[in-house]
Image (cartoon, rainbow, N blue to C red; front, side, top):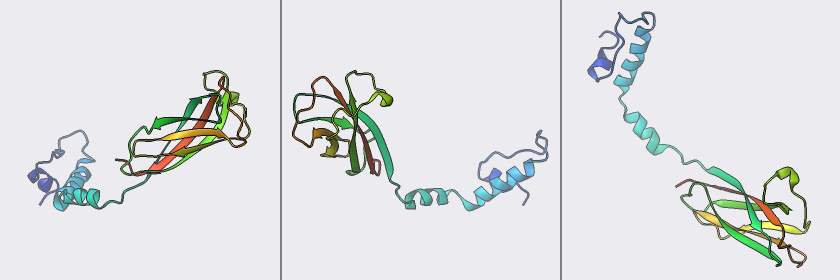
Length: 153
């Protein structure tokens, strides 16, 4: 059987000898023959038996301060997870304006901490609070970072 015959029999295009790529037609057809001889069932089997891989999503959020010891907000993951992910939230700083600039963040409340709770497949709640019991300032925005690792839906 000549190179390309099995590919042609399987309905694949083959490169004719008269094509401009005269030096490469034989190798292209050999590759197509190999695919035709193996069939495509191995592709489906590979997809079905592949291991599921964990993905980490991350982001930055802002909570508007209030005259309270803690403030919280619910946020959504960009892409939902198949099950509840492992999550981490950290307080990264505060500022008095709404324009985010990491270099402009100050440690307004050194005793402030961030944490996440109530994670679901689609989001979680971030909480910023002061560990000394003092109130946060209503005139500041408190920024946090989050990361969530799991299998995407």
